[in-house]
Image 1: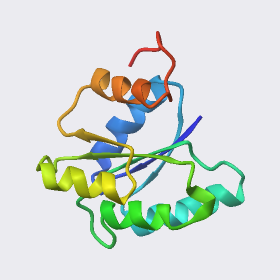
Image 2: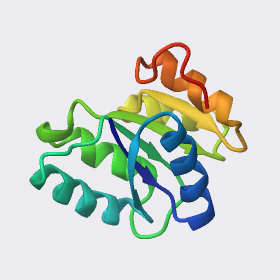
Image 3: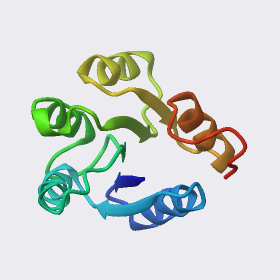
Length: 131
């Protein structure tokens, strides 16, 4: 399975990608929403549309909420599971993200087990596969 990790923090991209790699995902990375859309275009052209995108909210150029809306507006990407991975913990922000089309929401800081649990809930990680 493939995943796209979108975060302006290189360290956070590495952490999330490491967790996903341990869960048997192949990962690609982007540092903001606009870069993520370009990466999705390339992955789509290579016939490797990711099953999952882990998206930070606060990024320059195009933020995570704008990215979620852009992905949901493109038919080619309607099957990508979108999970916000962000410090935004206000209830209103969570509601906005879910209303825009995110499937799940993980608040930073988090543990590898917490991410694995969310992905199990979404049906993307089989039971017994640990972080």
